[in-house]
Image (cartoon, rainbow, N blue to C red; front, side, top):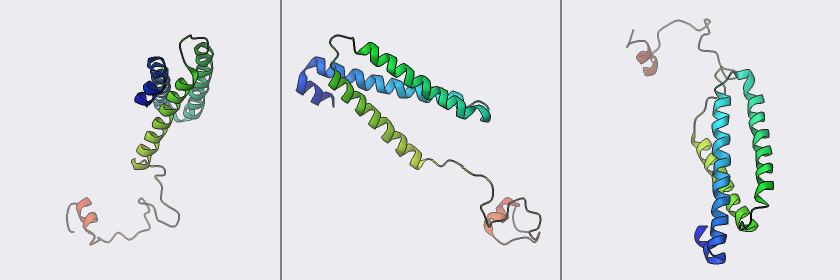
Length: 139
């Protein structure tokens, strides 16, 4: 992207595109850090905290775009394209990581299964290898 921006419009275009990319990156990194703090709080506060982080990000972004509109030397289209590249790269990275990350969503028994702590199961020893390892060998 940097080479294309420089080739199409020179140094000013390159700097505008890189500034858009940097702004998008900072925007997402700060949002992620704020969300990590919110998610470390009490469970009852997580949703409202996440919505507050999102609202703050939107308000700051609108204020920043208003300020950036008056900056001389900043080219709008390369800036927007640089920010778009940053947004797409960030979102693609998040999708890639979340698809490969194993996160426990539900820890109870699935419908139709018995729970691990169910006392109605028979207490006879089992011959499954994993169970033998859990219980310290064969009984």
